[in-house]
Length: 156
Image (cartoon, rainbow, N blue to C red; front, side):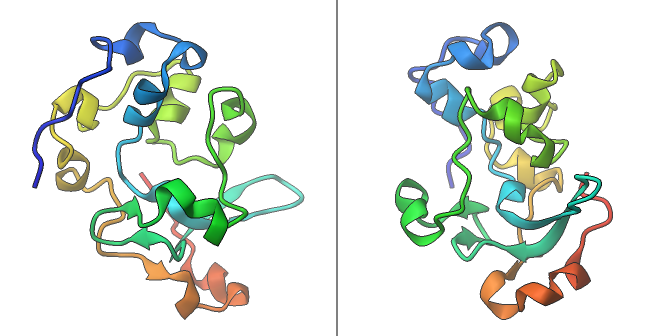
């Protein structure tokens, strides 16, 4: 288990001073805390725009590592998977969890202490209880019309 963050190609504390649109690709990817919450299937109310997270996870999410099992080629398997990019963050930030580094920085907020870039340890997201490790249900086990039975009331 790797307990250190690979900081090669990262400017020191880049997230504190570099705008999202000016980050290099390595920095952009390093913002992901590895919680897996963005891989949870969501239900959006068409009238209010309110987004509800469910325990039902994308078929590619590894429930133990909280990482996509096919990240580089995920769109081949899940065409609707959103590719988060600096130029599109403003359009999709609302459906990211409130703890997400991309959303926090987009909203002008600091990263949390458990974020691997702050702590230096990729496991702190799990030890802090922020990740979805061990409590998701694969989407192929639940019919889409039943997803609302798996809505998470508090995703903090």
